[in-house]
Length: 216
Image 1 (cartoon, rainbow, N blue to C red):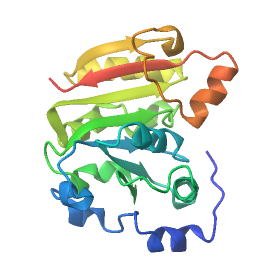
Image 2: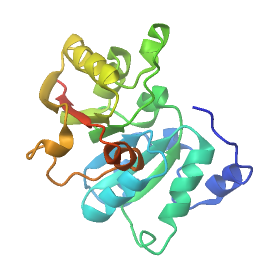
Image 3: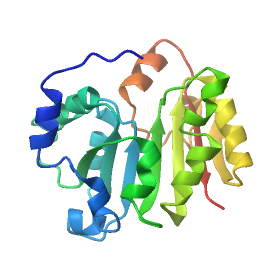
Image 4: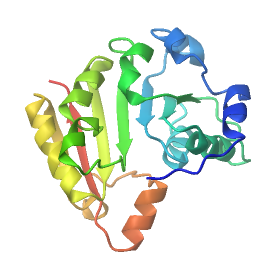
């Protein structure tokens, strides 16, 4: 995906009070960052922020951290956060970083849930290890998740979804639930909050796949 560089992005991110500039310094200390002992949920690759902002609004007793690699994309999430609809939220922070470094930012057991929404499919076989649901990334998640922590993954890409199902099993994780048509699955669709991509793809008639996996 080609991203348009936005010159003001870096300056805005660096000056914003709810963007954590040196997240590695907060490793093991995220409860102090939020000032409470509520569970921490993170979204990796949060895009423009619709999902995580609405989650934070719906669940004020959970602390949310949105992780985005690209500053120009993070800028859009921050701009949305600063609107009247979301500016009173106290339970959300943002980090601009590569998900490969997640173990440098969170300590063992510090994260209760990880959301992966419409991640880059990296379609070429030689790039499989870059997929956020690969065994390599599941090992990274295992190093920061609580013993009862889970990963929730949504995508419209069925090939990537099938790959992810295989990787969950190969990594020795437990597949708690999955569906190839989320919006028609009564139980799994309860309380579902859509991302921008989810709304766009589903409006075209594309079924949405979802899985929930837990470390063994």
